[in-house]
Length: 292
Image 1: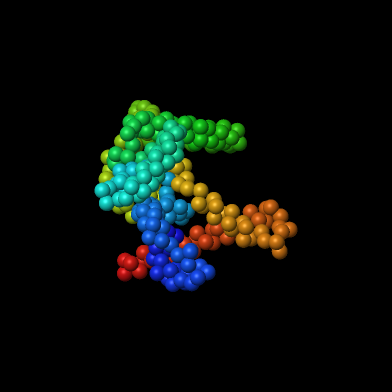
Image 2: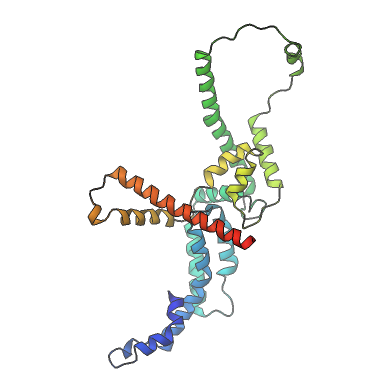
């Protein structure tokens, strides 16, 4: 908005150039303030727009974006005015305070580590601690999730299964107990090995889709895939939820105020998924045209 006002300053002066509105014409001091504010806000505008998306992964990019903003984009320079430098410092302090909570830092560190675009990069000061927490989370998910469901399914199958008919033993049956002597690998060792192999690989292209990468490599990293699926769905900002409220406001109008809550839920679901499908289709078409 500030950038737009600065671009339209000559037109604004012509429109207000009469006796009744001449006092509204921005002075050179006003223009100088707007230029200083725009110089501080404009570099961060693109990052804000990109992190507000809901059709791609955003949570894993918060730590890289914060590091880039505080150490480069919003770092005061000699060319900045005093007002621009003060605004940049204030923005950096607000960002650092907002993302200071330890629980939030842990979540962002895990999401960044699980993104194949950023693995191996030094965005986290406590990488070893993050690795240990990821392994513990993998073990908790493995024990409490699939382990419990597998044991319940086994018990149910044992109760309802019909005993198989007796059959003659084969040579393989006689040799099987003697050859199968290797012990089962502990879950912690498997998780640690899987995480080590994952981090040893090179990061993928920064424009690649991490969700597509995990879909193609879930067979290689089955334990990490479960945790990555948990964190990759987190939105970096509240903009997606605000879009849902806006969609609900467009559906529940004064002329449609008698809609039942479950009907509203279904209509909002259809509206949002239709928009996301259209956006995904447009993105694929644009990428295909660019490749051609």
